[in-house]
Image (cartoon, rainbow, N blue to C red; front, side):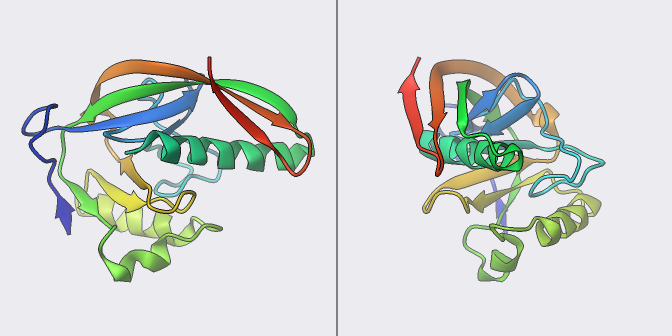
Length: 183
């Protein structure tokens, strides 16, 4: 199933999105879509819809979903080093995406590609979609119930980046307690 961006305040061929991110290289995002400077996310093992050889731009439709994604991934990084005292500033961005994207939210057959613990099958799906010329996917967040995310395979389609707000996240102790305050 494809999702064509709806007619909205952003225009007839654009979906608005938001994202939150830390710095300019490790963004995590939310969409109307949220993101950090439209930088594609690229990690050594890859991410949900990209392998280690290719990045993707990630966002979420809701601020809370963007924050849940950021907090989850920061928790993983802190657990790897066994350190639960940390503070980070995250910027929230609103961006536009002009593209037709595959919509995985209403298709029960895609549930197997949305594991909370492994990106193997979702990376395989992304590879097949890329081979077919896909520009990206809209999918349900596995970090926040009811949240919606986007992975754009062609970050150049992410444009009109507007900074919205800055948030301070603070980790204190284990298990982590995360404080979220607008900076």
